[in-house]
Each structure stands twice: as C-alpha cells, then as structure tokens.
Length: 132
Image (cartoon, rainbow, N blue to C red):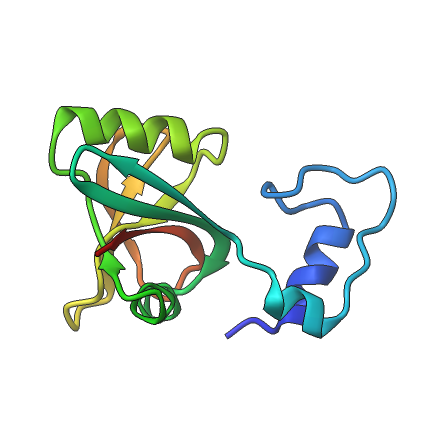
C-alpha cells in the first residue's frame, strides 16, 4: 500500500492527475491529509452515492465505503450512467465500483470509454460508494 507521504510526493511532483500540475509545491501534514474527506456525496432518485477521488486499491476502496456505511457500487440505470459521467469527469481512468470476488481483476467504471470494465485489484483508482 502506498503511503500518504509517497502520494503527497507524487502530487508535489505534478504528475498526479487529481491535482494537475501545481505552480507551487503542495505541503500538508500527515494529520491534515488523514482528516481530509476526499469524497463528495450526490443523491440521484432514491440512491445515494459518494464519489471518492483519492486513489486506493480495491480492498482499501471497499474498506473506505464500509467505513461510511456503504459498499462499492456500479451504475444501475441510464440516468446513473450520466451521474457517473458528470461526477467522475475529468478523471479519465477507472473508478472502483465493485469489490473483489477473490479474482485478480475487479469491477470498475471506465470514464474514458463510458462503460463498465475490469482492472487489476492491486491498482489504485478513485472509487464510487453506494450509501444508505
């Protein structure tokens, strides 16, 4: 698992797509990063989502969703696909949407192709949680 310090270093180097290229170095303490909530809630019809932009492995993403009282989730209707599109853009990579089932590849939403896909579970990606 990548440490918070390593992720901050990646952001500081300007290679992280979540922050873009920074004109000045980003500085933060470990405590402030851990206290920061990277997830944004969005309600659609009778469903509640949390879009979490901090990259995590699939197992860490599922644990994050469970800590919020939810689970990883995939879009279940055309309207939800559009919700995913608008809330995951401009991060054009896979977003975790399904927990591991004991196989090496896990379910994800691929923003670039606007479809569900599979990605290696050990990779770090943003995630989408379904909340109660």
